[in-house]
Amino acid sequence: EDLNKMAGENNDFEIITIVTPGINNEMKKDEFIKWFKSQNYPNIRVLLDESGQSFTDYQIRAFPTAAYIGTDGVLVGTQIGHISPNKIKEAFEKNVK
Image 1: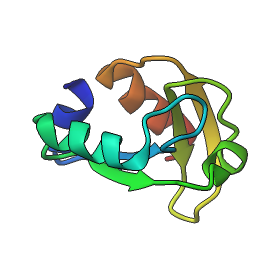
Image 2: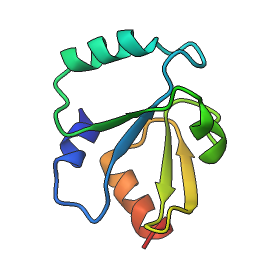
Image 3: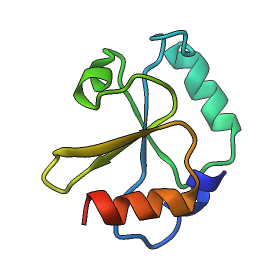
């Protein structure tokens, strides 16, 4: 809910969720799509990574992980675990701007 709210705000950054269906005991693609549609998260943009390549590209070791990526596409930092909206904004200011 926090991410959905923050994603709907006018920020200097975009929030994108990457889901790896069927990898690391995650729901299968069809299950996830059905579940996500039943949620009320209209502001969250979800990308499906069926190959799991995002694990390598963004150094993911645990769920959830926040990855801070500059406008040039370069990963500048990650944070493992649930992070409050204020902490996400602080990390963005520190790591990306």
